[in-house]
Amino acid sequence: MTGLENAMGTLIDVFHKYAEKEGDKHKLKKSELKDLISNEFPSFSEQVKDQATMDSLMEGLDSDGDSECDFQEFMTFVTMVTVCCHEFFCEHHEDE
Image 1 (spheres, rainbow, N blue to C red):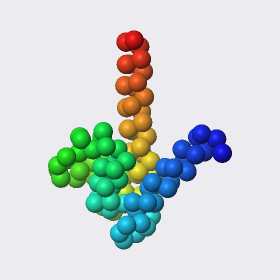
Image 2: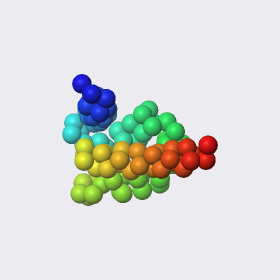
Image 3: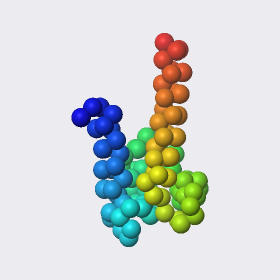
Image 4: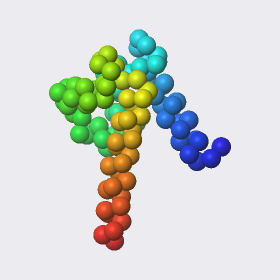
């Protein structure tokens, strides 16, 4: 498989690793999303220290209003974080 295909597989595996812990195995509850962020995005998790921030993040991701994060909503989150990291990398790289 290509690097991109491996990356896509990893994203799917990580989502299901956390979604299968409680309830619907195709959606992340807020506690599962928090665990995922803490374990898989440790740098980002420093920004999500309190419950109000976590609530706000979940509200922003939960486009269908079911109080859970499905795979599409999760991918929106991953995409947003990736774009921010790319922008930071580009700005930092230009400064060198």
